[in-house]
Picture 1 (tube, rainbow, N blue to C red):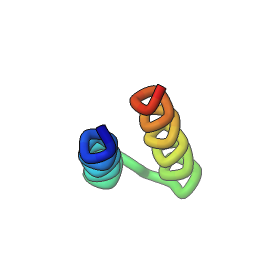
Picture 2: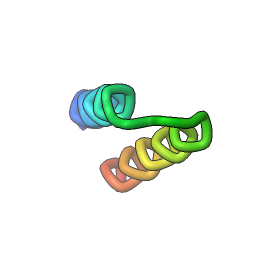
Picture 3: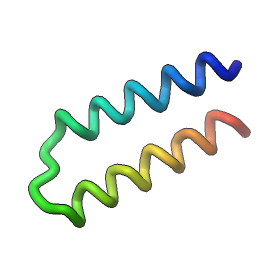
Length: 43
């Protein structure tokens, strides 16, 4: 289970990094969405 969460978080982080983060605010929102997705995966 933990391995899956780590894999999911890594994949989402890479997606956020490769996506169109045009501003620091956009990057912050992407990081928040990764955190929320990780929480949902844990629940």
